[in-house]
Length: 178
Image (cartoon, rainbow, N blue to C red):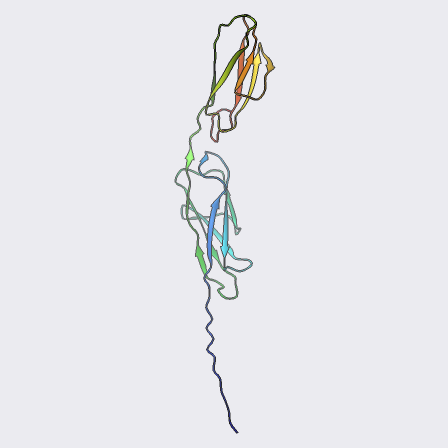
């Protein structure tokens, strides 16, 4: 008899786990709750998580961590321990997110336009916001009565002595009053 033998060398490579994190907001206003989310790869169906705030262990064994008391330059990261059959116990450290906290600023608004006009002539007025944000809302009043639309301009024929005011509601991210 004649025997033929074949040999095959099997190489099993383990792929190490990795993890990256993102923040729900950054920069933020002081006191804003921020949620950090970990996205692991090659770490099995139920990896374990250890979050760190300035290298101090925090949080729970979860793929998210939330904190409403962050300060400028606080650093957040997470370590994942894999439970995958191929790399069980292997660990990966995430990127580091460094927080920026903005100080609150006051919102303000003033009105521009002519203050003296001829009777019966429509006069345009413009609200000029400070720290109003990208989409502030406006409510105009004539003699304390709501008028106009949600616009930074208002035009009307006024009566002598009318008092015109505008209320700005800011949507700026960090105001001390809105």
